[in-house]
Length: 433
Image (cartoon, rainbow, N blue to C red; front, side, top):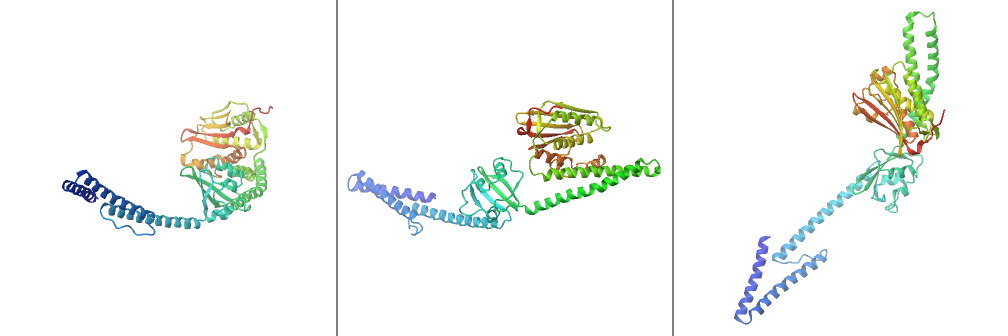
């Protein structure tokens, strides 16, 4: 490249020297130097014209044959063009591969713009949601998926948990929708058919509910006979200990069945909880009295009532949720420890928390705490008579009241379970006894 520019400068210098020599021999020096410069400039303009014409008609004519620096410029342009063509073909091939791979995906994929307009969707998304190409491209996704739950999910900015809905074209199908943010405010909408999983879940719930109902009657009969045998004065003392153990296990099974029935009832109720005023301060005072009446409990059970407000909801469900949280804290706190209940509200809603000084919960168990039958310490839970359903009942009861459960725990120091209730559920006047 340096040699080309050296040659071009040498050519210009030679032409000017030639004009100077002719000026010294024939006539005015400036006129011949000017003529030499004009000749050089004319040649530059001619080469520039030929280059411009070729660039505009590159697909129709061959590159011009020019020497020197102009030939090097043409060669570089040809190389850039070939490189661009190569990358263009490679990009087109990659795009075809991406389209073929996304078309083969079992899940639907929709690309949304920052304004929630449909930019692109694959074949499975069109089949599951009834989208048509190209008429639906450029339309807002919430105008095509007319579901209030999806609209709230779309504008919530909380996309970690997928949303399960019925699609507008097939009401007997369940679809899981999950948004994934990427790029400059764009979203990727993943659509999955979860009909089989939902039906299996419904069958499981029905089985658990039916089995619980069927087991309740024989267990009641067995418990009745065991109670009669325990009260029989003429019973051989050898049988006293086995009957006492059988009564304890029967009571435990009755507790598990009662929890299963309560959980099945909460899961089968898709709508929100009833809107009756519940006097939360009075409910918590009663729970504190019941806790203090227990024979095995921590030394101190506190209650901090920082608000007199109540809640719009179901008294039975709220009492069940609060009782489960309190009983868990009492079970897993040592006798010399303490449990503190707290009730307060602010401009964003109302809150109930139970803090204990128990053994705490390891971090790896936190995500699964509200799963049914999940226990952090299996041996201790069984020894305490726990069913593993308490926190699952709490979660579903709170969801029916528009609330959620927050857990903060430090292993070896204790845990705090906090129930959050939205402001729409807060009643500023509680029911008087």
